[in-house]
Amino acid sequence: AENFVLNGWVLIDSHFEYKTHQYNGNFGFTYEKGQPSFPELYFTINLERNFMDAFITNLVPLFVVVFMLLVTFITASRSSEKNERFGSNPFAILGAGSALFFVVMIAHIQLRQNFAVPEIMYLEYFYFVMYAAILFVTVVSFLITSNFKSKFVHFKDGLLPKVLFLPLILLSLYIITFVVFF
Image (cartoon, rainbow, N blue to C red; front, side, top):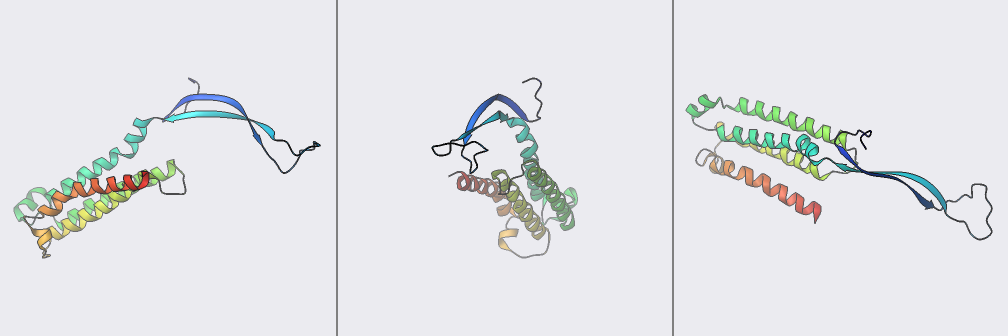
């Protein structure tokens, strides 16, 4: 086991085993009664994924993006004094949203390269939620700092969308988990 190196994985067990298979051919052997099963020798390796490596490389960047989105969202204001203090204007918010989008997109591409599966994996739904969160924060923050008139957006300087941000993300992740696993 100490000579077997595979980053992010732990070797649990390895062994040889025979498995029998039915083939359409007889491989040159003649049999009187039916066609027998042919044994094949397999080398089996049982591996276990190191949870902390997968957690740190795939989920920690998403947590950081959520925190940065929350900070960007909270600093968005109609007050010119707050906007000057935090440097929050529509173009700064758009720039922050674009930067966070590319961070999530590169992490998503890296995930797809590490796990080459044809279907959508459970972890990918987290990235889809992040795309939606980035779009939501960027659009609503842009509307808060602009002259757009809306009671939902401008009630107490965008209090409703700001308060609903994290619960909506957590609720969407809960619903996705429930749908995927149940």
